[in-house]
Amino acid sequence: MSTKTETRFGGSVAGITLEGEAHTLSGLFAVLLRLMIGGMMLFAGLDKFAVISGEAFDASGYLANVDPVSPVSGLYGAMAASPAFVEMANIMVPWTQVLIGVALIAGGFVRLAAFGGAVQMMLFYLGGWEGELLALFDSTLIYAVVFVTVAALGAGRILGADNYIEQLNVGGQPLIERFPKLRYILG
Image (cartoon, rainbow, N blue to C red):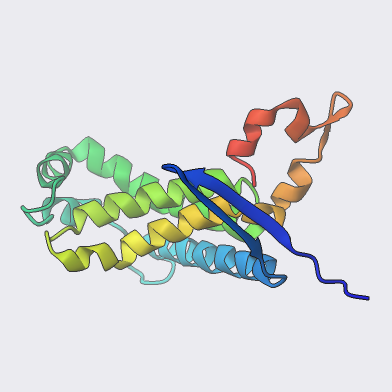
């Protein structure tokens, strides 16, 4: 008797139908991917708090030195020229990285956290753009794709807090049935 369980997946994109079966180890690798990218973000945030490096984060240097060929160079330059924006970024970037990391490691609010991680990576990617074909393989772009993949896999439902959060009893129903739109931030 086989205990092998396959999960079918698929969908249509631009008129192309994609179908397949996940391997039994797919859940394990979804959790590993979630933990690894979560750990990366957690330690990146802690480093910006000077917990690891001993140096406090300052966004102004990054924002002011974006390559002029980048499509966001003017915008990032304007941000660097605003002391209020720089101070906000100095607070927001480390905190969001720590919160994204903790959420992914715990497996709670995974889609929301992964979206936040993907947005940050895209902002870093655009800031680092140098106009070369190799930019398609820049690590920040790859990280953005990993965050989207973690969200798409619903990796918080596999050994994660989202599996429990979705089943919380609210008014006699599981939370996710009572508020179906929460599927966009949980999972």
